Image 1 (tube, helix red, strand yellow):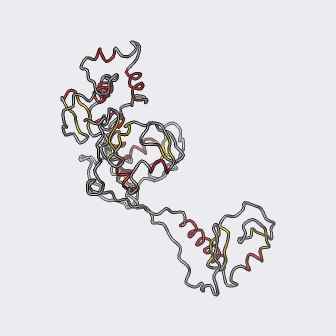
Image 2: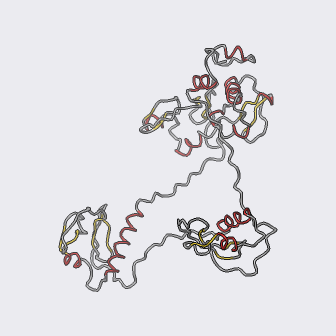
Image 3: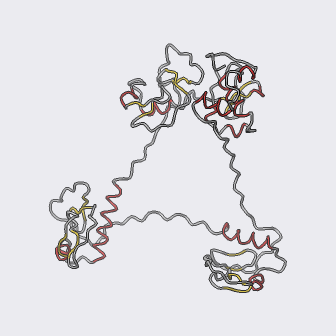
Length: 373
């Protein structure tokens, strides 16, 4: 019962009498949880892959091409023009940008082929197209014929990068400005115009335009690499008891809360989705915390990995299933009988009453999950 911390009732009329007669199931759910009733998520259908029909004879000859039509035994054009050919005519599938009569287009396929066979053949030529593996990124290397820079190398300050051909620091952020015909943007400061002859003088006399272009590409390549975040590998403790001390005393969490074994506190199950400047408080529904306040909720020795892992423990694991006289775990196994889980029973009945949702569909609706004590 919502009026008592741990009361239960089997009488639905007694439960609904607590609300106005005009209140809908959605109204009751939103008043209880502060969130609209979740819409059942449809279970996606598995992809359907076409196969070559068994009644199609094999092609005597197979041409090498990307779009081979298994019914016509011909190569079709990969590109089809958006062209209207007029009444009685259609695009030639083998060429893609020329028109032929409908009779000629039909003659491309066997006489016994039906319209369904033709449509299937057109879909198959796309599904059977060989998959192209993504090209690996091409990283430029310093050309071997470039001599090494001599003397003491300058120290470049961001957003500058060292140009390995000019042996100077060039500005990576260039102003979008127009210079005269015989002048260009100065690569050293990025926001002033200098004669073209002075820009050319930055590079060796033997440097070609291709060398200069490659030197800039190398600089941009090195500059972009500075912004690639390192891959963070997070390893969670395999067991809690081997790393964390046991909570003493162990609190009894009321309904709509769960026990966090790192902070040794009971925290709310459902929280509002707000954008906090730093952290949303796990100990309340809609409060924001600073970083210091957030980390003070946990032991001083706790790492960020410990904190992240603690949120995955003791989260709701059972759905209350009245028709099974007990609870059903997320993996489908039966859990302990819990006739006093009023919140779970209410959530289940409200969600199931008119939606006709099966257990598998509820498994993807995290808002309906409530821990079975």
